[in-house]
Image (cartoon, rainbow, N blue to C red; front, side):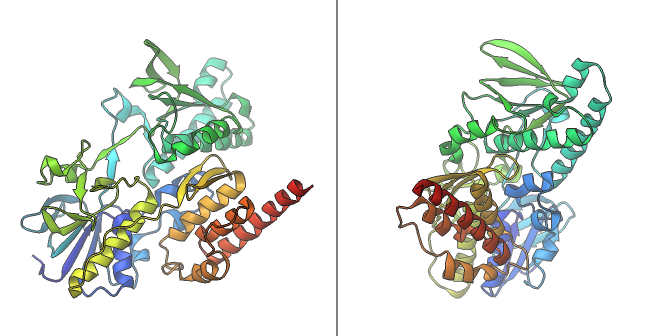
Length: 457
């Protein structure tokens, strides 16, 4: 057993867990910090599409925890959590190691749920981790190579059909990416890219329903039709079974079958089993089993335990399950842990919602900036990548030190102009990294300047 008096254990290396650890290191937290995750690498999930498509490399999207935490003083343990005893204040790992804690941070996030759909776990390809991205890449290239060698049009049609299950943001972004990417790959193999099909199946009547990105629904629908091959959208399609080369679904009361050699599953998630097993009463959970936390992000029954991200909901608040929310919650948890260590007052979580961002194909996106106005196309692509690059926890960013001068000297003005062009430029404060920020700003200024000239003329 470890001495629990001066030890904080962070379970889960997602946005909440990792950024809590990094902020604690930045704040010179006086206690030992241990970060536990079963993976060797942190996965920057909003940019997993760029990793899959080759637009960004592994060092940017899936850096190793040891590299991220080098010199921070945070101890990284690669292991799987077997159980948590909140009463004994201990975390048990599958390796047999047990860590006691004075404070615990829960950042386990969600897990994939197949909702009991027959064959989904066996035949559908999930898109959740870097390994999933690699597996999908290999699978698709294999199917394209088979298709280009087959003369039978029916067999070729099946091999060239990709079904994406789920009309939430992950499904929409994946479908848009594939609809641009696959035609490029198939053309390089001397195939007719017009034969490629990407079909988006969604149980609901429309895409992005009930999601924070719903304000971008109409834009997303239009963009899906403007890819290298248009995305076919099947709404009101309840998937009931998945086989090795087909998807069965109910539509308008009838059972139908879509022949597809590739099925990608993005339909939903569930609360982590470890979170479900915790001895927390039902009145402090929601219907999905997520944990209720106070405004200071503590468990009501165990105030020494902090939690954030997808496995929680904040009392009397409605924060969306996004990377920017989890990142800011990590900063609040770190502040409050330090406050406890020095006997200071804790602060409630405050989330600055910078808007919503959707990748809608290669070099294309939609951005609802600060919930004030919408940007589409390449400017939105630059804003989206810049926003996430600012959050990338790589050593070179050093808590965004390289972007402070950009933010303060060039882009710090808040939206107070009636001119849309100026608003876009001002919101490029989101763009991180000095080089990326300068290039994005120049590009946006050029584009917006051209637009202004057109309007004047």
